[in-house]
Length: 113
Length: 116
Image (cartoon, rainbow over all chains, first blue to last red):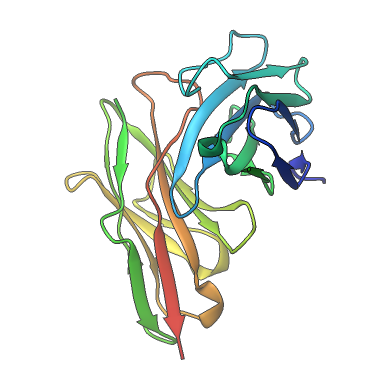
């Protein structure tokens, strides 16, 4: 079946602009995660959705970052008033509860000029 | 709190030789442990996991990992490395005790370079 998809694959924006990143999880996966990966660094957890439970937002670096998920489908990560330090690859992953392993999308490479 | 350490930023090995990528973890309860691989300009791919049972776990592409509770380690191994194994490898842990949902904590990654 189809894997996790993300769009756009690349986004170049100017400092101060808002951006919206999209993630389509694997069908049937109840959990969805967003991570940030800065150049040459590991994964930084941002936010996690599980079914209808309140999301775990503990990793969001500032109030400029927010995310939404509609039911158990698409999620959007929004970054307002982008800064140069927001430049990174944003990875989305989904998982079933039982299996626990997360399946990752190809990522969105965000460049803030 | 849960944490993962990958002490080596880079591991170099000759093709055909065995490889080991090290990982140690810290959790309050029992761990779920994972290895992922990232090829250039691509997302992470799941390699293998340990939840319970045999300490030696076999995964994709001939990789295996050994869970050692006393040493709190989960080193990734392969008996004979291939040039195509060259990639960035991440270890990750989930602490069952804290019940943090499916939240994983990732290590900083180890770059594996396999040379002819």
